[in-house]
Length: 61
Image 1 (cartoon, one colour):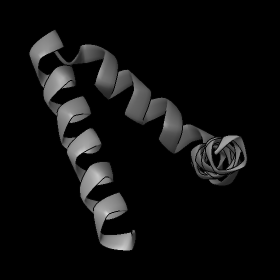
Image 2: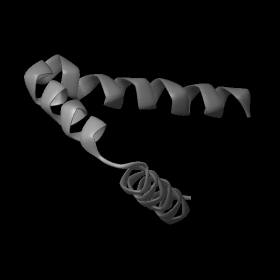
Image 3: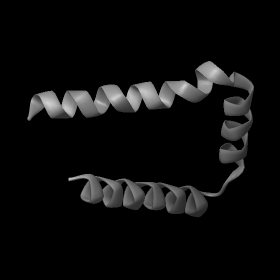
């Protein structure tokens, strides 16, 4: 179980690092836009992201 969890965290870090490595300016612009969103919009983005992850996990497993 720990091995799978650490593998998932490692893959998340690799994926999270792609955009800042390839295009730091695009990441900066995206973060600036995200900072201007209200809390409700950020929560909705987080919810949609979690639901997408759960659906993808369900489809793969």
